[in-house]
Image 1 (cartoon, rainbow, N blue to C red):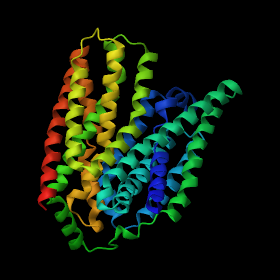
Image 2: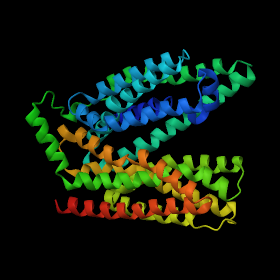
Image 3: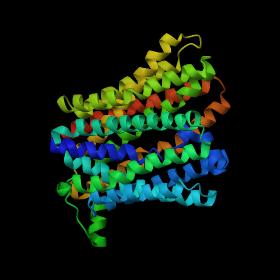
Length: 407
């Protein structure tokens, strides 16, 4: 129970640190009005955030092996919260860029690998699936609850009390900032990372040996392939809103209802897959989920345009449930990579660098396909391509299961 309590703290921290960075998901128009920036300028800030995430994946793993993960997580929450205080002062566009750059470092360099490593060493070998399932599902639940409170409060302040948009938005920002600043000391004093076996200072030759050891393991590359293909399946769901509205003639309200219902599949899918993976076999369960998710996505891609909403809804929910299940279990493959705790952070950074590369290229591919093949054709080709890679990921997961079993 003590370990599950620590897992709960890490999960809440992971769910509370990122929503402010993506405030535009729910408040984009209000942000443009409050900060006096254009949609393009706000997009530049988010693009800067994405670039810094990719650039810090590997360094964040290296850092997590040398500094206590709880110290890194606590520092991240503190820094992100203080940057949020600056953010709440409605700074200029130039200052916004500095804030987003700071968030990229605080949540990428010092938080990402640290929180994954903390969970990996907190769980026993037969608990990896459920711990990572609870982490991803719980994080989604925390984000959903915070967003619900933020949107409801914003509506009350704006419409119920008649406050200006900028005042109401600043209060929303302070809501997120308060959570981060409150969690910083809790993480520091509650999380026990004594098992992380941080290596401290290492010579250049020793560091080079660590890199060679991690990158020479085929298990690391197979785990990266599982996460890459699984994350692609999840990323494809971002296109559902536009796909359904533009091709099936659904209203914005209907599409919004369907996509919100999909979001609530995250805790169910992620946590359920984690427990099932521990009782059966993590990699084999992941392979089955990748196959199921690929076929479900392919089904959605070839549906006739006159398909009824009663048919679309269950298919979208199945895709959502399975892709969230994949997300809940794919980091549990780290246990099968056979890397010691002292370099586990480096392995996490290397896998993340490959596994989350779709953040860079999938939006470009989708945009090009939809522009050149208008209507359902472009989306269908996009979904079918992602589904094909999902099947390749299932092969990688089965291969990783065989290597782990033989070892």
